[in-house]
Amino acid sequence: MAPCHVNESLRAISHCSWSVGGKLIISRQKDSTGICCDSDGWYYSISDTGDPSPITPVPPTPVPFPLVYEAGCGLRLNLGHAVWKIGNAYLKVMAIESKSTATREHITLRALRERDVPFTIPEVLYHGEWDGRYYIITSEVPGRSLQQAWWYMSEEEKEICVSSVTTICKDLATWHAPTISGVDGNPLDDPLLLSKHENPEFSCEAIRNHCIHLGMDCSTFVFYHCDLNPGNVIWDAMTKSIGIIDWETAGFVPKEWIRTKMGKAGAMILDHDDGDVDQWEWFHRLDQSMQDEGFAFVDM
Image (cartoon, rainbow, N blue to C red):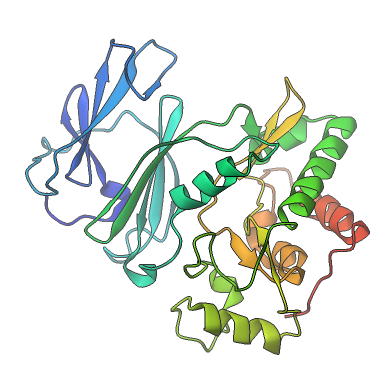
């Protein structure tokens, strides 16, 4: 398959099959042996051709799966990532050439499952890597993201949600490591932890030096999700419980980075067309809760 932008990685090859990166095939079927399904009773299976070149897509045909997120796509072929919803699963494709040694999300999710965390995380259904891109398919976490659910939640539900996420942060922070890194010791993929003047190589030493310069305690490092924006926190209204998705930037960081990152991430804002509502309500509530629990903030 000819080189394409990340958000063009999913292409039709027939009315019931689609190519992913020219190597993986997703097929729609009635057989319930697929890795995921949709509300119409279709199941989806995956097969790997073993060669990222032989699949030839049909002429431009709309893909029936919604593109639910994209960032940095269309600038260069080796930039960006995109996410499609396929039934009750998600396909994420990421360009990785500029951060080839960073910890992969499936490794982080496996480590979290081994720790038997008391909140819901996605199940990894497939992962692969070729031609400078990383591919992962994960299960859907029950509920709706705070980006969708927040404005319909009661005051009690909002309090439960904020308290639950604070507790999750506290529990994860009991997991320590001797270096700033991912769960496997590889570099942490969080560009905000790098100095603006650093080459974005995501080396553990470069990030540590910048954190020391900012005055953070680097004697030990604690585990953190590193991107608790309202799109990544899932609220299950039936069980009044929390799920968390998108663990691609998670890893061991100075404890001060937990609350500091929340205050530096513009993605913490809630989307809403009404200019009279507080779109920072999620951040303000969570920040206050984290402060009450002793999490410090470092001025950057």
